[in-house]
Length: 294
Image (cartoon, rainbow, N blue to C red; front, side, top):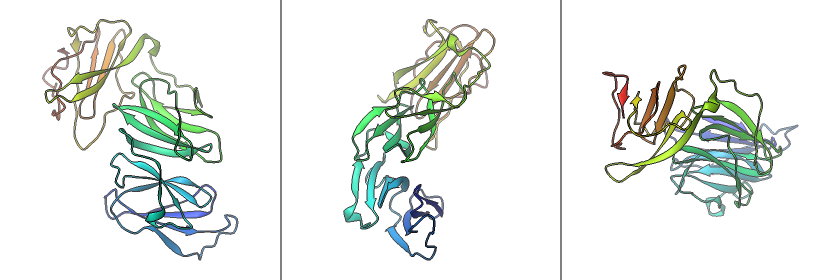
């Protein structure tokens, strides 16, 4: 069980989950005035079954915004008016999209949703009525770790990492066409000599597999380069582009990433793209030889 108070101090939201299941019940307490909360106020029901998961985004007066996977495996945003919280009164604000919602917040009178799009993070901004406003201009190809904000504050705050840059906290306002850092990251190498690009491979079963290559700029990707490989898959864990590649003096590096397999490559020369990637793979063993040619 967990609980939190809405940013305006009016409502206590209680989330109850049995065991490790992601599904949960949801309750609320109307505390009244945040300066003199009614601690004796009764607990009232929003959801009293365990058929889906619900996460609180925030509230605007009595309207509570939730992210749920109810009838939407990739999640959607709904609004529940706590004056009439019965399910028949729920309203879909942002319907389920082709991509999974990974994180969400209210910020500056907007809804911010972080999606996973072909193993790459995207943040989209919407009005409180669900109209799409813009896509946040992220610093590059990479992974958003967390998004935060307040309905009554203009800033959207998020953390971002990529194969070339360590995790850094950014903030932006309005439509977020540009972002600023709280403190610039200081990599131990010059990342301007490298670049990250996204590619797609087709597996044996026809699945289109996204992956990323990080390497020195302008090197020929000709499939004839010594490469160090690492692979992993299972438990619905995505290996998204993030800091972790070991850059050596004078070396190049590459990272291949997909929902089910991650291949990390590094060489003192050039990086190439291998052939024959299958999403059915669970692991790729390279212990017999750390340097492979692909």
